[in-house]
Image (cartoon, rainbow, N blue to C red; front, side, top):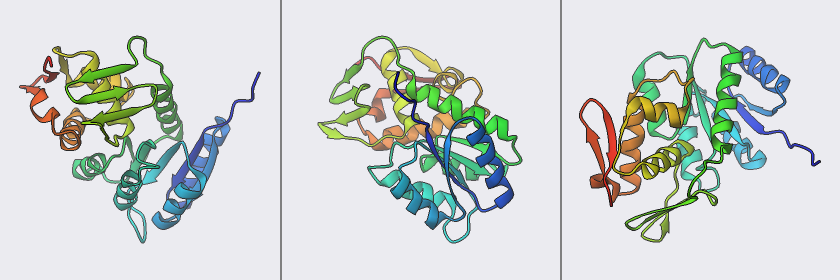
Length: 231
């Protein structure tokens, strides 16, 4: 049997106590960790270590978490890397901005390290889950290849975050069916997700921005959710 290679997680957090605690709990669970205490160092580590997941604090010195997130998402090599954002602010606006920029999940401080590790595990589970059924979907000029983890529109590749990819996949699997926000949250973010249904709206909006043909194809069903029209 081959050796299981531990997943690499980068923690970018400027509060040493929180950083050490998160590191301790993740390593206890078998993950390999890398740490950075500011945004610039975090970006360097992303380039040099190629982490499988990034835990990113929102409030960082020199370069804040939102800017770090934006840069990670605009680099094709890291556009798909899952990001869990840590935010000390309970204000929804910051969280929404973080999600707008491509964070996949967020945890509000103070948090329990065990809960954060559970989120990390859930994220990896969803990324590794091999859905039964077709591995390729076609919708007009849109093509999704699950095995290659690739989406193309008009023959050109569209970089999507893990959550955007999961959301589009679920819409394509259920063409013509109304999917409630709760169902989408459950399937794409997991039953243990504590965010608001507003998260779904933010991601739908981003999908439409990245793939203009979805502007008319994804229909909002008042106070319920969304539907991808039959092609």
